[in-house]
Image 1 (tube, rainbow, N blue to C red):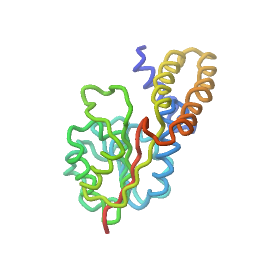
Image 2: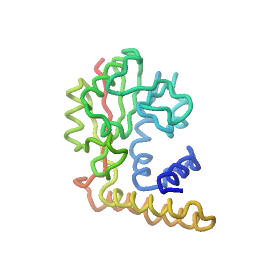
Image 3: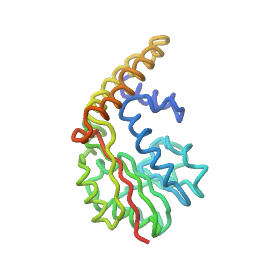
Image 4: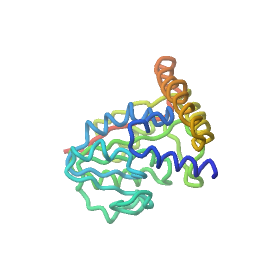
Length: 236
């Protein structure tokens, strides 16, 4: 079984279990920085744009009126809409109170068009929570187009019409490098009973948590941010 297939098996085995956050510093940063923001703003009608395996659904479904999903393909059963985030005619305008889009904008050739669509489908006063990479290896080629700075992300959101924009950094250089270590370590050991459990604990404490905490201490200015999470609102 190739490493990519093993990675997919790990995702399936972990599912929405709380241990999923310890897969790597990159995943951990989403749980530490982005998930609290999603939970804070999730309300009313909620749509997950680029939902993938829907890992955050269990955390917000009980506090929303409706949980809808959108993706380029059906990677998990029950996706509400299939399509391209740059053009979502199947999604009605002024419909959602909260929209979430995580690690999607780097994969679309026209992020301005995508954000215009997100703005359109939100109700007045609605909130978007989105995350983007700043440091990342090439992935999902050839559909890997951009990396973002905090200034560029803010500009894109403001140009789309959003206001009250807040941008937070996620992780740093050690988290980026740690993600590569975690991926290699776990994919090489996942199918070996006993060794898998040892590797998981070593990865959890000496790679995932350690890299994330050190980034916060050693790079307080965030100039080597691994990525950013933004929250913005559509004007009333």
